[in-house]
Amino acid sequence: MDRDLMAVMLRERWLRKRPQAAVLDCPWRVVQRIPRVVSESNKEHFLAFYLNTRNHLVHEETISIGTLSASLVHPREVFAPAISRAAAALIVAHNHPSGDCSPSSEDKDVTRRLQESGALLGIPLLDHLIVGAGGDFFSFRERGYLKDSGK
Image: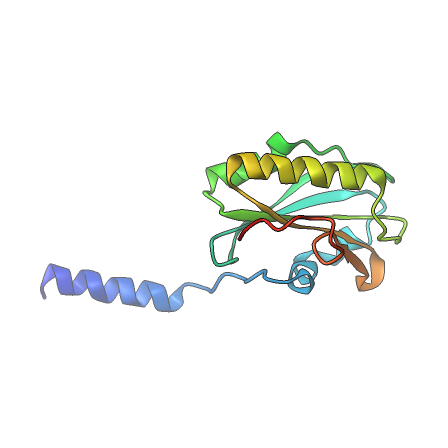
């Protein structure tokens, strides 16, 4: 058998078996990716979801686990995986152990810093979600806290 034909056949077989990446194109789909143990935890977990140009998930990572009422987050920890994985955009999320999904002033500040950092790096922050137990969530994008990223 011709090597070129064999290579084409192997590629087609690999593409058929490869699982499709999740598409994170709305807040609800992101919320569904967050493990229940995180949304019900008594500590804040800060997660990042790294996307390609079609909003397909290429990587997800827990950036930090904080305390009952705070999580330490710095743009370098959020964007390092984005750069190493050649992500085109990202969405971040964290839980509020209190169950109240309203953003604190610190949440607003972190969102602003991440958006500014993403603009500098060319990796836009598409949304920041706050989740509580029971499936409640707050989307910075839907509530107008995030400017259009141009994506």
